Length: 383
Image 1 (cartoon, rainbow, N blue to C red):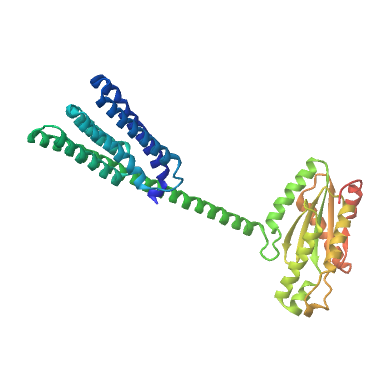
Image 2 (cartoon, rainbow, N blue to C red):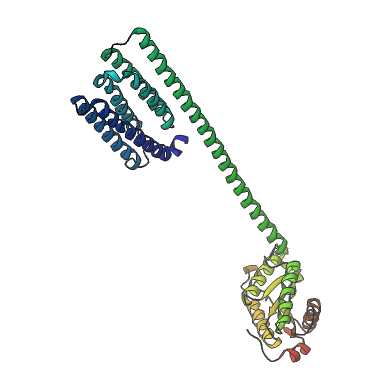
């Protein structure tokens, strides 16, 4: 995973470092000219440098732009070997430059290790080839004493060792940095997952706190909060406001006859019918037991009565379970309203509750509207 994650950076850094090293190698043709002049040795060196520079720059371009997402170690190793061969060939072409070339080989070895990161194996073999090849060329093409050859060997070994451990330490540090970064990303991912889980739990708790467990309508507390806000807005905008109290008729008989599970099912179906009969701006809640309450903003008493009658009809048309076919579901609805007057929510609920019980005493399955509210509320509204 680490090697895959750094491939793009390795290609970029390798191509840049190789281009710089190759151009520096080619620039030494200027010193060749001053030392050799326009001689056959100069032209041989110039040709060799031109071939090395051309091949290395071509490979640098291929590594940078022609590999896609693949990693090919041999293609990274090839230009180093070409560059090392060019440095080695300087000895047979210019034996007199041995002292200078020793320094060049040490510098090239260090450059291999320090400028070509994350390719330790490739660099090790290339640097060994450069140093061994240079030593062999020095022994074969120059007249050096044994002690001098030994000093060159020690110097070359020092360059290899220093470069090797420098690159090794760099790679270890980069791996540790990658591991820490990967660990931090995992921690951040876990943290985001934990935050998402907490938000999900908060949403679930909010639903539990705001919704009735059986009917999924607003519970009493949440309804009161929403209805209070709607009432205050209606009063500030001088708009009418209406409120229903709904009671399921003969609900005790349903429980006693068919059991509480069937009674719960009837409540759920009536709640669904009520919610489907209302407008998006209306708010409905379960007030308790078999009672429901509805707040209707911007609705005068006449319009509220029409909506209540439509709701009552919806309930009467509910399809019931086969064993409950003899049941005719019905609701009694009490309606209270205010036409922008300074009336609080509790007073409206009390008035609607009074109308509800008046309807129950009058035979149930009916809508009863507070007559005083109709008189003060006539004159506008919306369905």
